[in-house]
Amino acid sequence: MARFVSVFSCWLALAAPLSAVLVAQQPPAAERLRQQIVQRFVETYRTQAGLTAEQQEKFGEVFRRSMQRREELQRRQRELWQALEGQMRPGVAADPDSVTKLMDAILANSAALVEQARAEQREYATFLTPVQRAQLFIMWERFQRQIEQVRRRMGPMREPAGEIDVVRPPE
Image 1 (cartoon, rainbow, N blue to C red):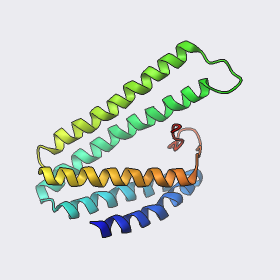
Image 2: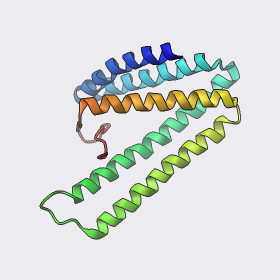
Image 3: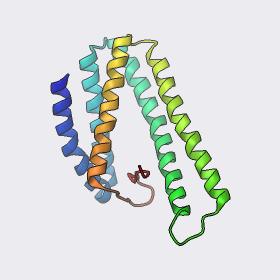
């Protein structure tokens, strides 16, 4: 497992900056790269967890559906943070009502992300063993941390409207 994490970390560290360049230049290529990275994660998990054919089929369905919902929530979270940051620009008076609504929406969306994770775990529990679920949980958390580390090293980036936005909220 440690070997996998090390190899996967190196691979991700190389792939993520390339992905950022491709997003800025050719959005369809970046999307393909993102899909390849996620597919590689799924394949690695399936192998590491020793899923049966039936588990693999169910896992693929749930994982795709969950990723889609999670991406929607994360996109919404980024939009809300950007709007709040826009309200808080130095030298410009913030609209208190807008700030309140944005902060409430950010908290509600954060709660929705947590509920999404709970719902995923409930669904996975119907066909994965507790050990397999824990493997997925740990691998996914490490994967997310690695992505965040790469994003931090790359710094804030803004992309063309309508594309994936990788600007992160302040920490």
